[in-house]
Image 1 (tube, helix red, strand yellow):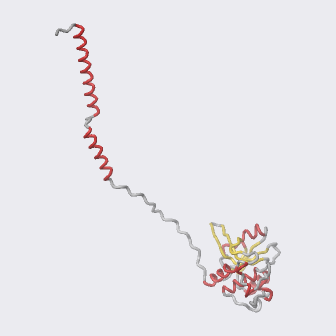
Image 2 (tube, helix red, strand yellow):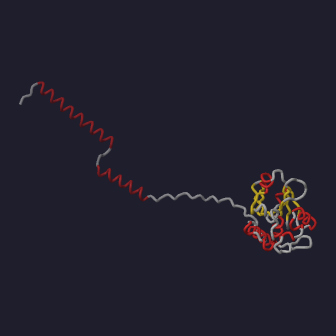
Image 3 (cartoon, one colour):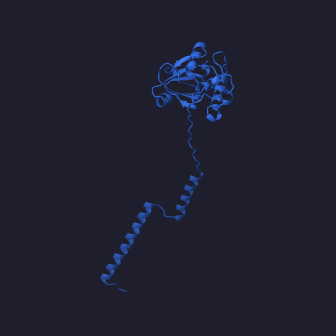
Length: 236
């Protein structure tokens, strides 16, 4: 069949277009690499297998050692017995009134004296109680804070410390208070805790009326009795 001039021109253009598309496809394939799905899948499986077989990394462990905490010194047997007595009988419902009686709302020295007996002190002609359940039958030094202060000073059973010497105060020592700074003593307790944080020393004590096991000395002289002064007796 003989083609017209225009038909021959159209066919030539079509063939040229097909050849151009094919050439472009070959260039793109060359740039992107083989498109074999089997090879692509194999590569992916190999990568996954390698990732699976890689050993798990160990979790880093914190090996820093905690700073040691300084333990409080152990109490001697006499002091432990003293503190045990205080903690067993400071509450109103557990007063040891059958033996020692109660001095109404001023039972602080009667209780402190009991604790000193539990520690190992012995009665004498100045400091004593009949243990008959009547605290008023006890001697003045047994039941009066000022008389107790004078008794300790005269016998030398303990060393006097001021509140500026807190660094020398220890558990089991005697604490006395002068609420109005007149020179006498208005309240007596036994030190049950000494806490030291840096340069700050906090002291707590047990007592009767006000009944307490760990009452703060600072609270006693700033909140309960503003302007009051604390004194201590260091017991060997």
